[in-house]
Image: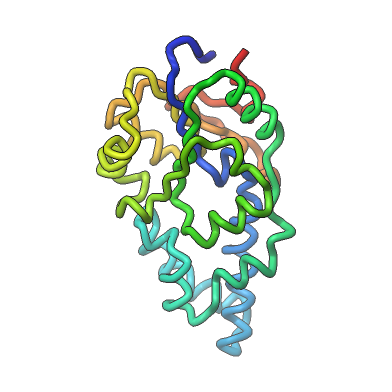
Length: 217
């Protein structure tokens, strides 16, 4: 599925690609509405109804991923809440096996994530995956989310990857479309980012259920 002889650099997403998106969906869809309801003395249903348009307004923007932004807007310590529920953070099947094989292959492995630094640090501490990356790039450091084509321009200034010899693996179709528009030649979508949900049917890109399907020989 992947001609690994053509690949020099591998760009990997974190949530939904390496880590189970179940944690993030549970956190934002269950934990945050419950805590907001407690704080506001309203029902969880009322909290969800109130929060939905607020969340929607920031979707795909850098604020969407910024824990500091949501802490200020919601009046909750979002980073602390994540720490309180960190037992739900899990690695997706075959992630470690894939990263080990990638390390043996000698390809440059870069984690490129929209996650806020507090969330990134917590998840790396919890999973121990940090040892596998040659570099970690957070969209907050570059000033653009991965959905924005300017992210890839900024990334190339710090990584100097060649678009024709770079593989990006991500669960977000909007991110993959952005990378495709920038010219990255090798793109793979993860079709089963959340273990609590059914795999998605993806036609726009080469799609795999998990990383086991593209482990380099």
